[in-house]
Image (cartoon, rainbow over all chains, first blue to last red; front, top):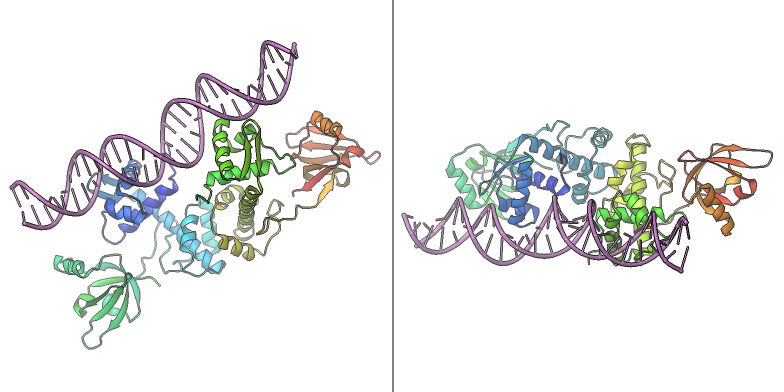
Length: 223
Length: 223
DNA sequence: ATTTATTTTTAGACATATCTAAATTATTAA
DNA sequence: TTAATAATTTAGATATGTCTAAAAATAAAT
């Protein structure tokens, strides 16, 4: 009958959702432990608990997958997080880079009525101050149109969310150069002559792509 | 070095503050256990912890007293609680009787900057929607002028906060008729002829006071 | 002032969320 | 394909916040 989640459970669920957001739908114990800044052993205990509550599928040594029920809960938390971020920036004059930590706390406030009223008060915003889409009451959101890397301009910043080609050759190449789904990248330089592109990852690493490969990599805008 | 309190610790501290607010400065284990809806044994463990942190004075079998440091923290939590209540009512159109539970959650959000900005956004309100005073950043607040029971009109509702006479005869009389500091009372009837007054306590109990006694009992307005 | 009743504390449990160290399973390499 | 390496799980601890039942201290009553 323990139907509500602890804040910790909510945070794990959200992390699982985010890790499985970009195509990779199976989440490893290690990656979760990194997200949560805990040890793998701790994650094992937790995923068992979330699995008992039918919010994820878990098989030992095989990783976890979020269920529809889990996704619904995760999206509700994300909705709250992003609405509060809008509140902090639009109403309280915070800078967009100061709000994440506070929203991490506010997202756990429990009151469906509060969320509704806050949403209305803010004018039903569609994106948060970072450009991330805000799920509606039913967990639906505009995924934000994706653009091909080849189509965007210099300085464009986005999340690498899709590969329009599932040849393992390309995937292996991406692996080798160190680009993964979910990475945030910025376009540093476009060469008009041959359409090749230089990007920079959040960790500062720079990568070159040919025009061909650029036309296969999809980005979702974030700011 | 554990300098921040858990939400539970904050709630205990707030309860101790409220229980010792109206003159009675020593709080018993039993009264705290009633406030917190826990067992006395649980309270004993907790007050020991708060005592270790120098937020209360505790002597076994003797009850607890809040320290200046504890009062400062308690007032900060109360400040946040009441500011959020104003936000919920003024900005989000909640009714004043719907906001307490939500504010109980919001009061634990940690961010001094957030509190400042919220305060400014709300126009530095002096009282919450229930008429309770909002402490400022330094924990100071207008206690709300107190009025003598003899001075107020019929239907006035207030908290009995002070006795302007510490003769034990009067205190014993109050004890006998069942009135205690902190009780919320309403004036039911004033007799013009001799200035005697009939009041009703929250539990429905009615009490008569002579004009003399009425002039010694101080009330703080609440609504 | 001694007995009785009440209040408070102690002792021992349990659940959650975490850890370290050891054991097990899966993956990679020779 | 067996051996070495990496990932994951299990086992056993710790800290927090709670409980019940029993012991101890204080307060009330005869």
